[in-house]
Every structure is written in C-alpha cells, then in structure tokens.
Image (cartoon, rainbow, N blue to C red; front, top):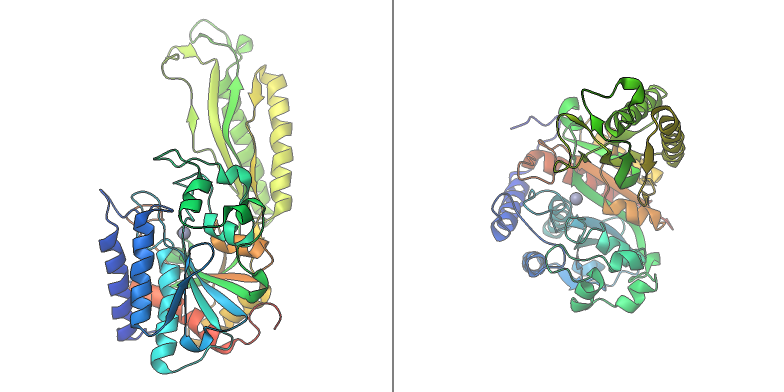
Length: 431
Ligand SMILES: [Zn+2]
C-alpha cells in the first residue's frame, strides 16, 4: 500500500469503493483486463448496474438525452441548476478498470455519503456516468460529452465502428438519441443549467508517483495537432554503391526532421512552456525494402501536444519550415495528411482555487499539474462550462490492464471533491 500523506479514509468508504470497482471488473472481463465498448450492450449493463446500486442507496436516477446515466440526492431532483460530477464508463479494448469508472464512482460515493450523513451540498449536484469517451471503438473521442454540448461533427457521426463497420450516428440513433439535433450541432441538454463540471480521473503519467502525492488538482488539459500519416519520399538505391552526396534518403530526412523538432522541444521547455511530441508510427514498406536498400519512402505519425495554442501554432509553423528546408537540403519531399486539431482547455480558475483549498483543508499538500491526456472535462470547458479535474495517483499508465490505483489514493481524491462540493457556494458560473 502506498502511504497517503495526511489523510486517512473511512473504512466504510474503502469497503464500498473496493466492492464497486470489483463488481464492475467482474461484469466486464476480457482475455486481458476489461472491455466496455462504447455504445454496446455491455456499457448499458454497467449503467443499469450502477443505477440499481444508486437506487439501493436511496438516490434518484434517470437517463439524459444522450442516454447517459444521471444520479442525484432526492432533494436535488428538481433543481434548476446543478454541478455535474462524473466521467465515462466505457474503456479501451482490454483496458484497465479505473480509467473513467473512477470518476463515476467518485461522484456516486459523494452522493452516498451525503445521503447517509444527512449532509447537503452547497449547490445541487448531479452525477453523470457517460458513454463513449474512448476513441478506440469509432475513432472520435469524447462522443457523449460532445453530443451533450452540441460539438459532435457530421464527420465524427459518420465514423465507422471497428467491429461492425456501421456509422456512429446509426449506433447512437439505435440507443434513442435524437440525431437530428446532434447533426444540427445543437446541445442535447440545456447547458445553462450546468453550473460546472468536475471530474476525478486516474493520472495517466508518472508525475504523482514521483512527487509522492496521492492526488493533484488539474490546471489545464493539453490540446494537440496530429498527422496520422506523413510520407517522406526520396530515391531508392544500393546501400553500398551510392555515395552520400548522391543520396536522397527519406529515412535520414525523417530522422533529421524529428531531431530538429526535438531540439525545438528542448528549447520550448527551457523557456518554461509546455510541449510533448511523439512519432509513434514509423515504417518503410518491409516487403519492398531490405537492409541493403536505401528506402524510397518512409511513413510516420506526429502527435504534438501543448497547453498553449500559441505553442501549438508555433510548432505547426516550424514543422512546415523545417520540412521545406530538409526538402531542399536532402532532395526529398514531404506530404502531410489532414491535420486533426484539438484546442487546449483551461480549467476554471475559481474551481482550481476551491479544489486546492479543499486539498489543504483535508491535510494534503496542494499539488497542481497539467493533464497530458484529453478528457471530457476539456469538452465541457470548451463549451463555456467552468470545469475542473482531480487526478489520482496511478501506476503503470492507463489504457492497459496493469493500471494500479490504491483505494486510499482514490478516496483522497473523493474527499477533495466532497469537501469542495460541500463548502464552495461559488462553484461555477452564475454564483
Ligand atoms: Zn478516461
């Protein structure tokens, strides 16, 4: 067990959390880890199970227009405006049990606790268990939160399911979602009712392990631009017979480009700015090429992320500038496929302050950090809803069966959110 600094959760909360996580895992096993596909019968089964658990706790439950499960205290059922707390229940194939689910259970435990203690929140709270956040099933990500906020594009609705190859829009229609509204870009819910959005999520990187802290308040969520398929073409040749000056080697050109981007990355970080850069797919055609052949073509991906739109735009400019220079110097040519752009999202300053104050109140050192991965909170924030996140320490990354979160760490995160919901009347807009 990882020691938690300054906060000891109650045994009853720990038992409830552990049994809920276990039961969710038991209901969604795969060859390795768990699988809860987006817009599947399995996802609905998990929501129905959560609904029964919540009703057993005396909570009100219903499905919203996006077919996501909502839960609240009976006294908040008629509230005109409310704070949304939650995350997603779907997972990647053979993923881990905590990514997404932890945020939903955090909300549910806050409600259960308020109910059993007879405590009220400063503003009414609704917990949301969303569908379809992961891009693994259809391609687009944050499907539920985008549909709720009117941000799901026609192109995304046309994306095909990896298994049955039917478009996302058809799957959503089958679940009873009003696709005319979605495709007209209209929100499925009245966004003015949502005072704020708060999401607990496992950290997907190693920062909190390194800091020895169980939780952190998230300050912003990185945006990104991506090219899935960049092609660099040159000229094939014999690896022994062509002297350096005569070569038009695309592999060397790609390496040159990546090293120039890496240098830029180092100096951006030195200036205190935020950036991460990955080329996760790199290949020459193995059929056509050989150890003794200069390749005629190399293909690679680029995933460039930052909290700052300016840094992303700067990198986009630098990318084309460096490509043009390398094309001249090395006599190759680069071709970029379509660029997918996601804007960075800032978390609400007031909510970040409130969550930090709660962290301090419950005896934890205040830790703040940026989120490297994308989350539904970014969609709500970009829809103008004040949003915030709490990260919980987790080993071995996410999107794999080895995710490892301690229940005590999870409950530290829950405590931060519970304290904030009870104390903060200023939560969100319109306060
Ligand atoms: Zn997630």
